[in-house]
Image 1 (cartoon, rainbow, N blue to C red):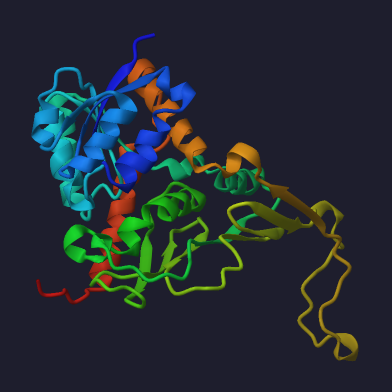
Image 2: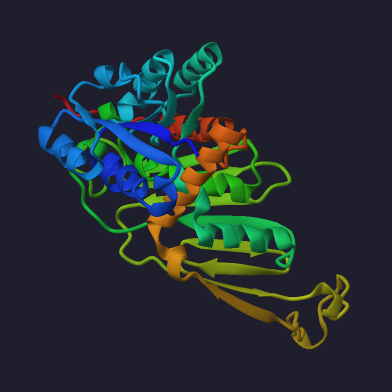
Length: 354
């Protein structure tokens, strides 16, 4: 089987710790080969040469000229994802871009025009769609056991201070663009793969040393779909849940490892009818509603971050070589960007002076 020759632009946390490590996993080494890397810092490229036996560049434009490179992994800083991806497509390369893809829909549309003109393959790296706990939540919701889903809560919270480039607006920083694409991608799918009709967002700068937000509260709704409540906060030391689902027959709660859900079967429920007059004896509505409970725990490979990266790359390989559909197509990423852009419009933040 012919391997896809990969060139990774950027050898920081993403290019090295995520893509580089994942592409050395046995399954992926049979399908992909890292033949070139690029980074401005020589110590990073030296590490890559030792690890992969590849070529190294300090200018990504030189990597784009390398005839061996077929697929470019764009792991540059966030602000460069669109322009570098466009250059790579024009250079005749297939492209996998890191998230966040873009701060605006207009830039995504510029990218789409380049994809159409060049006819080259393009994808966005959003591996959280393969997170087993998220997939289990979606499975339970789709089973109908919880009834009609009324609301879904997703909270990717924690408590931390941060002072690197990803805290700066000029670098497309902030929690919504950095962490946000993962929970927002999941939340939009749990909502029903639909464009939100109403978006309400509150942002704050709490523990950040930069000028971008590190606290986000986002509410989304659409007719005949559940309301979505999404939090991405860096000032939450207590985190009782990552996922919560409210349904007409029951509900679910859980974190990245364990889920618990409780429900009743309408066929077994006592028959009730509306009573407009005061209940006898000043009584409050009360019934013996039989409830069932279940739980699920992710274990082994399911807890391994790189296993979901591997699954993403396996899907990527099939999409490139067999025309299989991408798990996360560009139109869904574009929807995320539209939501993020609206959130920033609702919350204009002052910028630090250079």
